[in-house]
Amino acid sequence: MWPAVYKHLLGFGSAYCVGWDIRLLDDALDSEIDQVLGKPNWSLRLGAGTTAYALYAFALAVLLDPAIGVCLLTGAYAVGMIGEPQVLPSKLPGYVEGAVLWAAAAWRYGLATAWAALGIMIAVQLIDDLLDHAQDQWLKSPNWTGRLGQVGTIIVCLALLAILYFLDAWLLAYATLTFTYFQIRERVRPHG
Figure (cartoon, rainbow, N blue to C red):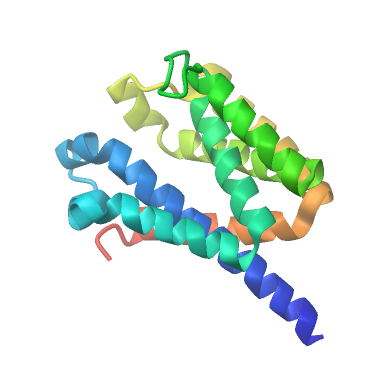
């Protein structure tokens, strides 16, 4: 029994560390708008150390479970780059860079884990867009709820979650616990 528990602790720990990595990187990108809106932001607290702590969180994620850590982060990056035509320092448009990185993770760790991680990150984006719809409308930020409507977003998200449950229920569970933690931290205890 202990090996199974240990495996799940490592998997959850990896997902949790990726959650921190994404939170820190997202805060670094959104620091100016968060400051204007009065939203808590880790990069405003950590300053120049934000990127170093994000790398530290990712290193921990990879040490705990390399497949989960790499696939979740590359999935998040790929989702974040959807529709980004700007050419990045790699000389690739953002959406191509995200796809190449995700494909490399799929090649290294297997399609099942990579697809599950990508699906999880799409679901996270849909839920986040649903929760932030009013703010994103005000900021004129792209938002899937604006494109699909609230009911459409919920239906797509529920269908995706059902598929993910059958694809990798444990990875979905680790990500759900992590996402719930960060939502509580951001929305229920914003300054805690």
